[in-house]
Length: 138
Image 1: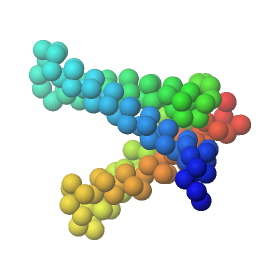
Image 2 (image 1 turned 45 degrees about the vertical axis):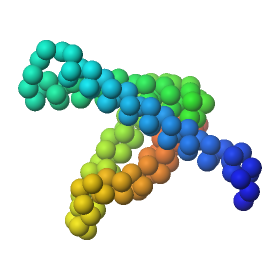
Image 3 (image 1 turned 90 degrees about the vertical axis):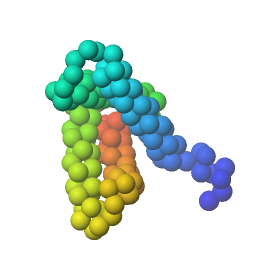
């Protein structure tokens, strides 16, 4: 397939937008987390976990809207939001399973996450695409 044809492939274009949204959502999550732990005068592991959770929730909300509007060019609905949350739960479980699998295979702690991303991102794309493209979920 020619490069020009690849640029006009809708599924590839969706996947690239999906990856872009994922990078932005990750930056939002990490940025909020860093800001909270650096600026709020609370110390301890509990606060670190709360700050991480706050960053995750804000990031998830942004991710939901960016995925709907930018990646798949659809509307956000409560039903899609629920399914989106479920897909992210499945995504998290896949991350943990693949991570431990690659660690079991003796990959280093630094390399294993990269292999996890290679396996899980395409699976997550299919799950999220189903949520936003399904006529039954609107």
